Structure formats: C-alpha cells, structure tokens
Length: 160
Image 1 (cartoon, one colour):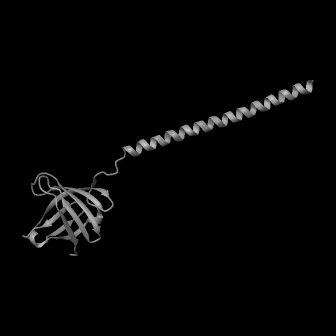
Image 2 (cartoon, rainbow, N blue to C red; image 1 turned 30 degrees about the vertical axis):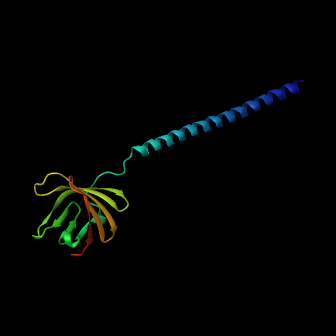
Image 3 (cartoon, rainbow, N blue to C red; image 1 turned 180 degrees about the vertical axis):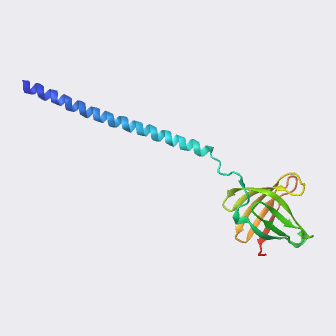
C-alpha cells in the first residue's frame, strides 16, 4: 500500500511539472504573439504617416544641363535653356539669361518631377514646373502658370 501511495505522489509531481512547463510555454507564446501584433500595428500606422514626396533643395542631377526648346515654326525660334543646381534660366533673343533661383523639387514618380523656383529680377510669385524626363536627351516640361493654359514644351539636350 505504501508503494501505491508513493507512486501516486510521484505521478502527481510529474504531472504538475509538465503542466507548469506547458503553461510557461503558452505564456511565452501569447507574449510573443502580442509583441508581434503591436509591432505590426505600429508599422502600419507609421507607414501611413510617412510622406515620401517632400520638397528637396536644388534640382535633381538627372535634369541639370543645357537644352534647346523644340518649338513649332508658329511658336517662334527655339531658345536655349539652362538648368543648374539651383536655377532655371532661358536665354532671350537679346542673348541675356533670364530665370529663376532657389530651386526645389520633389519626385512624383519614376522620371517625373515637380520643380518650383523663385522668379528673379523683381518678379513676385513662384514658378512651378512639371517635368517628365523621356530619355537622357529629352525632357517634356509643363510650366504651370496660374491663369494661363498649361502647355507642354519639349527640351532637347545640347552640348555647349
């Protein structure tokens, strides 16, 4: 009879230890699931708050260079255009560079940019441009002038 009592006592201890081990593993599992859920929710909320389309100083290096407008015969002669790190300039018929300074840009999507400049020489307001880089030598530019119809002009890169 003593042997049966000892066996039952031993069995009770073994079962208790196994249940405690299972309970401990269950607690770890629940804590891990809760942590991963919190991290996942945090990542979703954070990704919704981030705005990758911010204004950067200057102009993208891919757009910098010397260009000529590709105009139809009715639009007049093609004009030289110069885009530098901070300026957008057009050479007028009297061979003087006119343009804007303090350039900023944001990337809209692949090969599409929005640019804004402060006009030079006492002109107020801001010049906005939407530029599509078609290939390494060709840009399509939309000068968004308030109150005027928006039209696209093509610029071809030239070497000076």
